[in-house]
Length: 267
Image 1 (cartoon, rainbow, N blue to C red):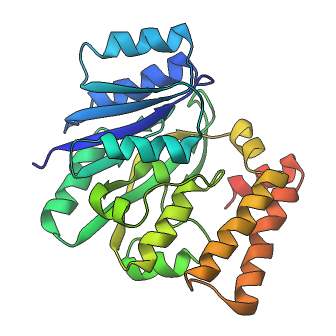
Image 2: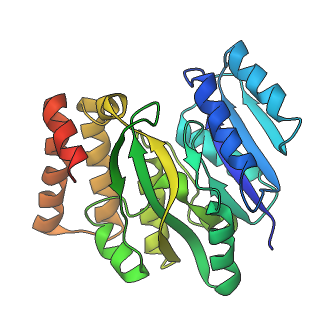
């Protein structure tokens, strides 16, 4: 099967035990990655360094260190340049992969030479994985993905595997607070790349109150406005419809946390 890289960004606030669980899930894959690129986005704790030192003995980890925190988009852009292989799988340092995730995705690329990106569904749990909160399903076909992208992010970022050359050609990652991935997918759609989602759950994600807190507030509203302008420039939305979508997306960012959690849980 074609070799591939895994790309992650690690920063100082990550919990060492979560990071270790993530690496265990990579070790337990039915198809192992050929390299794991970890961008250290600024200084990290001694405990996180210890986890890296332990797992470098049994996983093909390659570390790229940044002196200061540059944000997820900029860190991933650098990481993408340093990946060895054409195919790159994204992963967050506190999530857990389904054991067959990479094997399922690689098979899709081997069966379709036009394919640029493969994502999938996620299951969201509380922080210790004791309670399942929700399941985030995403559209499957390229046609449905394009329609869905007008309203919401059509991919679960931590599940995607893509052709890095095509992604770089679309402009790669850029700094867009909270929405680095959505920004990139819109540019990929504008290039008419073939992108799909699998129906399976590929990643188990830590959600809960802490994630809800990050999804509201004035900074998120500013990012939504920036996203709207990108959609308009790329002709993904326009006119009154675009304004309605913007309002629909901004309102939850201003809701009380308890109400937002109820909506999020029952989506």
